Image 1: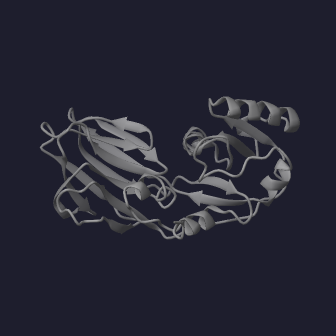
Image 2: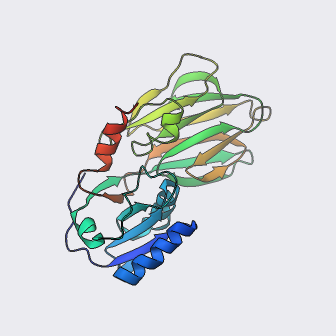
Length: 260
């Protein structure tokens, strides 16, 4: 999964709207030059984790690795920011190849909405009423009624994000599993979720949808008033993030399991 890079000299730059990110991009372009995304060896993303996800989605069809530098508030997916020795750092970096989830959400008008999620697909209640959901795995009902604020399916890369905040498990990057994690489960109260094979096909049906409306979110793409949602890994799509040697994504995920 992790491969060293070499002879990567053509850099493209992208930055979030934060002033510090925009200023950093201007300085680095003046120092290293800039190449259009399509012609670059690597795209340098300046911002936080949210901007890294945005950049991965935006450049998904280009097949270019993304090297992130933290100019935001959260930087789990980013490298430490420094303007020095950028070409040397990029060429010494290792890459993590990840595969997104495909979400197919069917709304109350029976319209289908398809989106990819790098971190997670989540279903969330829209009103004060708790959600009632039915969960099936590979066509078999595994939980006939889950009463909760919501539920999510997370990739290994996303397991340290919303999934971890919802008390889901941290998953090693190469584990080939997904996390199915409830959000504030009311019944069954003690259910903590499940680990699923990366080949699993998850279907979540919304019960009493008129009374208890639910939205579905794939990263930052939201569909409201859904009736059912189908979630599976899409291994036909590959994306690469690059990390400084000794600070690979695999190492970060492992270290997170031992943090206080």
